[in-house]
Image (tube, rainbow, N blue to C red; front, side):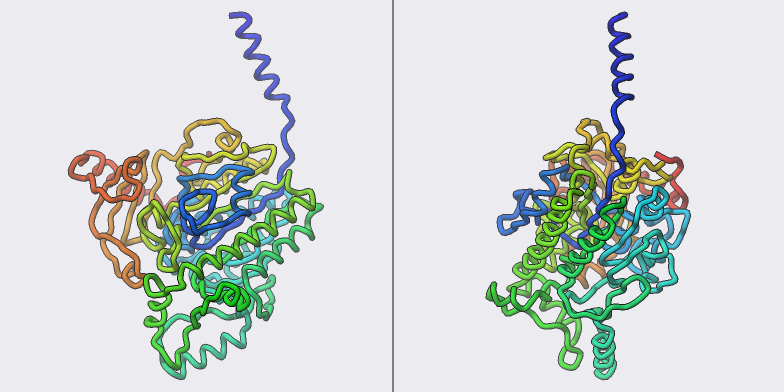
Length: 483
């Protein structure tokens, strides 16, 4: 017993004396609508080749059961930024108020308290007021010192010029054709505007490297939010289309066609080049990830830079994303709409080459980064993944995860998933499948959600349904305690 006591004391003393690593630089890469199978390291899609994303996965942990908080972008991005369910401030679907409440601090605000330089490059989309530069949702108003990018749900990949957008709106109004803009407006740079014609994926990659180069002698937090591989994937560089022998697809012209007819023709199953266009966007996305990671290596920053890679929601099958073996797409609460690619890497601190089947959430990103930076975790719904990332095979603390879009709900508890849907108007418009009713799935045995088990497991169905009702009643408040 004496030897055991001394060994325990020595172990505690030894652990306490271990050097605490310096707070890392932090790079958060958020991509748009990437399919679950669309990383070649998964081995799930034969036509995918993402060597740079694969290298990032090899340097850290890839999560096979990572979840977004929503099947669409603006709510889910708010969940990433705050570590909380966005329903806490009333955001269930598009058009929410954004991250307008200061009682939910953002990643940038928290990291700034520890002296981090904070930059945002890319797409901003939290809610209806994103483009208002006086609103808290605008990056410079929630903790970022620098911003280059756009505040658009659907940004044109090639055109970024206010005059082009104005001319388009004139044509649109002249012909009284109803439909959405392709958002060709200028890029923001801080509170100013930049007119340019450039392929946005490459432009954002260059801006990201430029920001890191400028601040390489300081601690920095850089969020890079690509709009790849979102609609409209046909907007690829002309040289690439020629090289691949692709004829491409044209942008909507209000003078000659109805918007929705044009929209449908570009989506699955109507676009014979649709998968090739998607893979083209994925190719350029992977290349820019490589550019960024190569900069970190050549500048010597790679060893003390923590990198997180995550998609904002599940892959959009109408634009030919591949969510194999999962059912469903962006816009709906099947696994294909909410289970996302996610990688976390910090060389020398986190275990490399790990593939984890633990159930985690994009809400876990904020507390994980707080732990790495030595910041007290605020009251959030996520949990720090640091023990898991350091190789300790313990269960994470997400006993239950919840989703609610206003017309569709879901609960994940262990292997069980409850889903309900009352309306499918939006699913029909976006050309995705959605079965109405109530459903219970065993995700271990049936990840494709093909068998409704309510009849054979009525008690589990009722438990999960009641859990959602309790969560919904309590959600409009801060989490009960800090983690």
